[in-house]
Length: 344
Image (cartoon, rainbow, N blue to C red; front, side):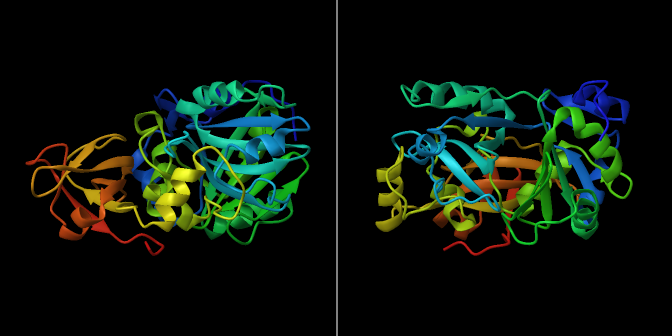
């Protein structure tokens, strides 16, 4: 691959990207991009995500004591979802984690990456761990979708991860199979333009909102700044999609999380819903028929069919009743849709 002559963000601008929010982009036609994402065979620069790196002889044991996933059980051919929680079991971050050479890489929402790094650093103490700062000039992330996306990754990487959380590498390119017929690709930023050019020979570029919509319909939640320190992992269905290991040893928040699991105290769950006629954002409240707050928007994105699709943490009873309103008792109605997995 050729060397980088401009930064990764500058390269994206030269290919038609435009910034819509501090860490979000589109390519000038967000409605068409949503349709491309819906039909498959698309590629998105994941500028709304950031990467933390962990190096040092104690990196594995340090993270094992901090995260909900089993870091010690993670091999080089797989990635895992997980959460970083407070001692009270409330999530400060959700992430994707994998082994990267002699260290580990963690992808999480860009708006919380610095804060999560600073908090983790507080607990390093004497452990031999170096936590690399999130830097888009160092690591570029892309997401590809559809059967054509898998073929494109195979052509570039020489292999394609077949099952969820499978990981393949070709030199400095890492490809990880996600939920919903999607693949995350990570590479050093200086090599990203050449990789992007090869992948876009057959894939349609789409923006941040299109990729976030794919996450939503796949039922994959992301903790962002408005939803930090509010919910235990089970409320976000994280244990249903492989993000919590109840057999591993102690970690921050484990006691509360385990008690919620085994004593049946989880009365709220993550639901997929649709709302017409309004914008929706992470942290927005949802009211039930009695005008009581019964839920919170976790993630939201425009739908290719119009309106907004959301992942919302709702009281199970309110979700079953079905009379749900956004932000106010007379606000737009939310309609529950089926997730691609069963809620236990």
